[in-house]
Amino acid sequence: MSMGNLSRSKIIVTTRSLKVASIMSSCDSYVLKGLFYEDCLTLFTKWAFNDGDERRYPNLMRIGKKIVEKCKGVPLAVRTLGSLLFSKTDEREWILLRDNEIWRLEQSENDILPVLKLSYHYLPSHLQRCLTYLSLFPKDYLYDTDYIIQFWMAYGLLASSNQNEEWEDIGITYFKELWLRCFVQDVTDHGSFYRFKMHDLIHDLTLNLSQRECLTVNRQQMKVIEKVRHLSFSLDSPLGVPQSLKKLKRVRTIVVPPLPFSTENRSIDESFVNACILNFKYLRLLDLSYTLLEELPESIGTLKHLRYLDLSLCRRMRKIPSSICKLQSLLTLRLFGVPLIEVPESLQSLISLRFLEITTDALLLRVIQPGCWSSLQFLFLHKCDRLESIFDGMQHLTSLRRLGIRGCVRLISLPRSLKFLTKLEEINIKSCQKINLCMEVEEAEDQDLHLSLKAFSVLWSDALTDLPRLLLKGSANTLQSIQIIGCKNFEVLPEWLQNLTSLQKLEISYCRKLSSLPEGMDRLTALRLLKIKGCPTLSERCRRDGGADWPKISHVQEVEVDL
Image (cartoon, rainbow, N blue to C red; front, top):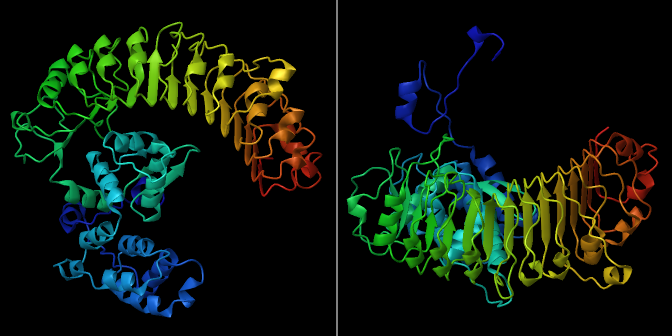
């Protein structure tokens, strides 16, 4: 099919609906058959066994062949059930799956929901609940684990027998279990978080399973059952709360997801929010992101059970009410893209807050008082265009684990009080052109530092010339990843880099002044990945065939250098 010659161009339409095919088609449809049985069996074996283990368990293979036959050539069903049985060697579990009553349900050739429902029923109950809540978002939605885990936290779904394990870590474990069982797909790893999608058939499954508790509001007049607890609004017209919903007394969730394929913000006003607050007193989660809301009513402070509040990209909002300080159960507050004139002091009264994402037009951020935000684990500052310095009193954020600063173009430095944050695991700085991370310290002070950084990244900063000794050398035993991208004045890697004995990944891109690697790189025995891109002189020195610096890195398992 040549696109250069329009007369020869073709359009291929794929659909699972014969009705859609008949409407769209100008020629006979081609009906795809399922995978051949042998291919299905190969796929099943790949997901159900470790390499070669199928030969050790011939009885399981015999049972597995019967399960594969029942999947009718549908790869998603084969893969999902195979992953469900992975590492299970008890024949009784395989037989229970093979002989489950759900196979006896009337099922059309193209309907695999019963098969997927079977795999759902074999999930642990905590994963079942986590999965069904994903139905609140539309098909093809790009999920982010940072925010989905905050959702799960708001509902109290995260639990562990280990009292010292943080909720956020439990959430990542839950997500990985869903991933391994093939309930999510298109997963991309961003270091400390993941983005993913759901197959549309899995999404159909979650809608089917959650229909008694979750409701998508897509028209003003709807018949609803009183057990509904979670509402997702997808009306195209200006939003209001339909009368039929106002009788609901058990609503826990209001979500207003952005319209598909639209860059416009959703049109809601203060009356919508007031109606939600008046009628739904037990709200735990309120997501009004991407809306044209100009003001949050003072009555927001009456939502005593609210744990998650998202106002991201409400671009017309300039302030938030002081009554927000009454939300003592609030765990997550997202104010990204909300051009606040100032960060209200009342925010520091949110003693349960664990996740704060904020944008402000202020020059300075208020001093953090002792005892404030003592539970805060994630702090992200986005596009604070006028901000020149961040919070004094950072040492009081004793639980902080991740610090992200992006698009703060006037920010000059980070406070030295960061050295007291012994739980800080990640610093990510992006598009802060003026930031200088030298943070000079006395030699004795340097030696006494015991930090816990695992990941450090700086992207697109003209002021960065070398690595910050204070933060990185103090994390010599924990630092696993360093990423420096687009720092045109970055010109030297320090000799003390060799002391970072836990370093596994080092990426240097578009730092044209960096011309060589330091001595002692061969001591980085944990280093597994080295990426060098857009650094012409350095790339030449790191060539496998005779590069001057190659002996320093020849032990690294994966070296990616553009030449």
